[in-house]
Length: 325
Image (cartoon, rainbow, N blue to C red; front, side, top):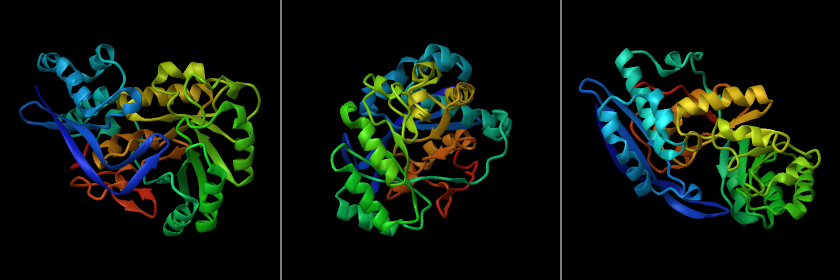
């Protein structure tokens, strides 16, 4: 078995801003596994929020290169490597390689139904109300908009989006930027404006207040939710969880997290980092059973990979095996 790791950078259509900063490009790590006759690929998006950089992810992967050469497989990978971006890239490459070896689609290997088109949210990054009205107008035909917030002037941002896209459904993502002292007041105001869900309003570890009384609208855990082992701590605090392959450490763990979330009564959102279609494709398998899909990462790029995902009216079409799995 041969493994190759590569750092790649892809420019964005426009500046993308969340509460923690802005960027004009995204940097990903691509893993390629080769067994002589077959090739499998996986992609991850290192996230500084979890102390990850492209370079640190490459170093993590280098630690187990010898194990992969000696026959480490996907299932054993889960036991010897922690959740995170590095494991995600390797795990998804294993899935792709197995698909190519067996000449069988990954969804069949996973015991899932054949994928169908899925509707995705489209994200508008943090901006001024005037700019958000224009951005909303440009995307007013999209059925579901996700608005990034930063804890200051957020209700004005939602009003601005509603002016530009009055018929769109709206969900929001605060990326841990709100304070607990006024959480319920802000949440009630957003609920009155028609917002359907708030993603990670409070910082991970500072969210116990969420269990104190009923929520005026559903609250989704993102930074507070990593893999299946994190779920039990979220019961009574959150109504929904956001599964991201980069947090969970791959498709294998994400499917298990989805199954446990359903048992525990959580609704499920499947999200992503900003990345290419290679990262979105395996996430689309998890998203088939999600309540909300937020896999617009490749839609934010100025240039995607070959054999990229097809998008039609905010629906992601089933991926080609030339791309992955």
